[in-house]
Length: 60
Image 1 (cartoon, rainbow, N blue to C red):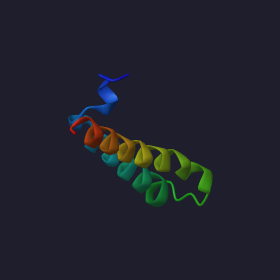
Image 2: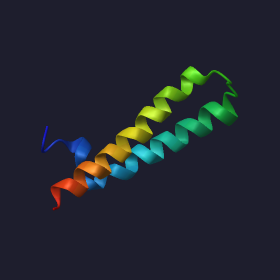
Image 3: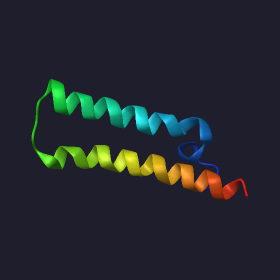
């Protein structure tokens, strides 16, 4: 898990781009008000933040 693709620095923006595109898709195109749909977006956002934290700790 230490050398996983998901924790590499180059993969960090992918989490935020996918979360943003998913939010735009569900909010404006599909126009859903169901909050359960946004859990996936929240998970991707948290995964991006976790990846930033892990990379910061590994560079020390």
